[in-house]
Amino acid sequence: MKKQTKPKHLGLIVGGGELPQQVAKLARQAGMMVYPVNLSGFAKTKSELSNGPWRSIGQIGGILEDLKDADVSQICFAGIVDRPNFSTLQLDEIGRQEMPRISTAAQQGDDALMRAVLSVFENAGFDIIGPDEIAASLLAPAGQLGTIEPNQQQIADMNKAAQIAKAVGQLDIGQGAIVCRGVVLAVEAQEGTDAMLRRCASLPKSMRGTRKEPAGVLVKTPKPGQEMRIDLPTIGVETVQRASEAGLAGIGFVTGQTFLLERKAMLAQADRLGLFLFGLNLQEIE
Image 1 (cartoon, one colour):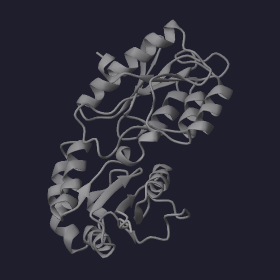
Image 2 (cartoon, rainbow, N blue to C red):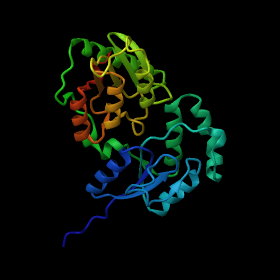
Image 3 (tube, rainbow, N blue to C red):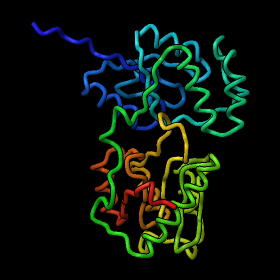
Image 4 (cartoon, rainbow, N blue to C red):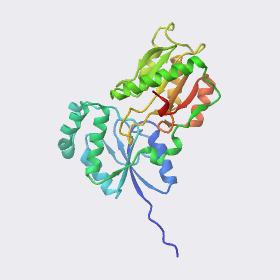
């Protein structure tokens, strides 16, 4: 008789957005047992994962205890978690021990902050894997997606926005930029992509495109040298909608390093709104 292999147990630290649900679904399809720990204030209160324990981000000891009780050895962080106000966090004992080091790292930038957080879990004996290792099927392919093809001006804007986003990322500021007719309209900082798009939409129409006459391109790239197991760029239906509201002509993203959520719906939305979607090769961004 063939010996049955025991399913791998995966601890999933659940932040906001759709990515955690997609990661959990694909992990289960791969034969993993998924044990979610939901982060209060970020994770969806009504989802297939919400029956797992809930912890605030300051309850580091509680999170570690939940994972150990679930007998997991591998963990994955998925979903949006905004930078907290460290002075108001409710901390447990382990949180109080670790927070001085974490808050000091936060002053060096988001990447240093994320590395400090991950080290807490690694030091506790957990193997951390990126969502891309589980959900590779969600990663962006190369070239044009959908039916809308960028013109020469839009390609030039996309290439410049990619260069700007890479430069901004090198300074650990953000992951995105918007360029319209050769002019930089916005770069992403702590406010995030959605807020950057809303800011762009508030600019005078003489500076940007409109829904009737779209112009300009948003490009999202990972930060050069960033911790790749957490915080890869993510694009979904809402990103497409906000880009259209800002009068943009399209969205560019890095092939193999950007999650495309609800891809079928996102492509349908982009085609309906007249936006192009394009996967860029990271090595070609100078």
